Length: 111
Length: 114
Image: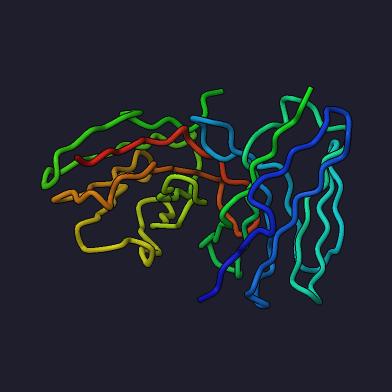
C-alpha cells in the first residue's frame, strides 16, 4: 500500500552541527507534506510544511526540501541544539484530510 | 490559550473491558482527528470529524472502535471488548479547518490492555 518511510531510524549529531533527516514517500498523488517533532510523552508538534508546487521552504533554523522526481523529502536543522533531540516524522496528504505518517527518526544531540 | 487536552492520560484495562477516551479540542477548531500510535511507530489515522459530522472513519481497525462528537466540540473514542493489540497511545488533534492547516495534537492517552 501507500506509505511514507524514512531511510534512517536514528541520527546522532554534535551540538552546533547541522542535521539532515530524510524521508521517502511512495504516493505520487500526495500534494502536501509536513514534518513533525515528537518529544517523549507528548503529541507530535508541527515544524514546517510544504506543498507539492514548491521544492524548498525555510523556517526558523529549519528547511524542508521536496524532490518530486524521486519522491524524497528532507528536513534540515541548522545549528542543532540539545532541545532538538526528539523523534521526527514526515507525513503526507493526498488532498483529503487523511494524513499518513512515516515511522520516524530519532535524533540525538550530543553536547 | 489552552491546547488540546485528553483524558485520561493513562488507562489500564483488562481484556474484554470497554474504554472511553476523551478529547477536548482547541476552542473554535472545526476539524478533529483521532490517531493510534503503536510503540516505536508513527501515528496512524483513525477518523476525522468536521464539526459534528464524521466525514472519514476509514482508519478505524474494527467495529469495536467507535467515535463521536455530538456537539461539534468534545469527542469521545470508545473501544469495546478491548484486546491486547489495542494497546497503544491514542492521539487527538484539532485544526481550524481547510486542507492545509496545522494540526495541533494533544498529549495522548496511553492504553494498556492486560
